[in-house]
Length: 117
Image 1: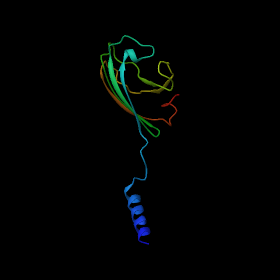
Image 2: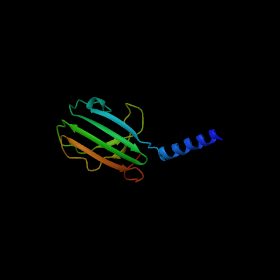
Image 3: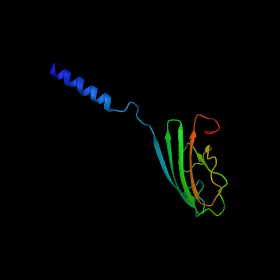
Image 4: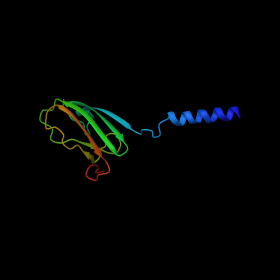
C-alpha cells in the first residue's frame, strides 16, 4: 500500500511539473557567401541567417553586408540536395533594398502565397 501511495504521489508530481506540450522548433543556421551559392559566384558580400521552423511558422533572422548594389530580392529555396538549384519556396517579402542590413520576418506556411513549393 505504501509503494502504491508513493507511486501515485510521484505520478502526480510529474504530471504537475512536466509541460503539457513540447516545442518542436527546428533551427537552421547558415553563413552566406557567394561561394556557397548554386552555382558559386565571386561576390564578396557576406551574411548569416538563422531560420526557425516551429509548426507552420517559419521565422527568418538575417544580417548581410558588402553587396555592390542594393538587394532587389531575397528568398529561400527548398528542398533538395546540396549543389542543386531548387525552386524558390519562400519569397522574403519586405527585404531591405540596401547593400547591408538586417531582416527579420515570420511566415505562415499555411498561406499559399507564402510557401510556393
